[in-house]
Length: 149
Ligand SMILES: [Zn+2]
Image (cartoon, rainbow, N blue to C red; front, top):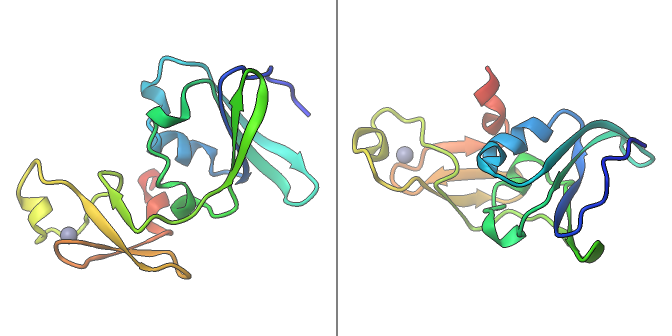
């Protein structure tokens, strides 16, 4: 496999479905970070065939990772300290998404009034559906990829 160098301090998002790395890059606002970020696309995987990997050399606690399971449930997070993996985590859907996705309902109060927080609550864990706290507009995981259209 392509070797992008070892991380000393940071985290690796592994087992990302091939093609989803840039979506995650967008939602985590990795473009705004000063630290090194490596995007590996189409890495070979025995389990998945192809997968994407993101390596981020910054403190994991400075980023809001809530959106990960909404984009892709297969992702695993490896936390790296002093060059070693100290923790492996599975991603899961949080009960609430705050300020990550925006309501598309033009009549929603968050569309009319600027500066309101965009808050969604988890309505269906199995189907990965969130609903707007203010107007109940549905937001499913297919919609999260629509920023490219
Ligand atoms: Zn709404």
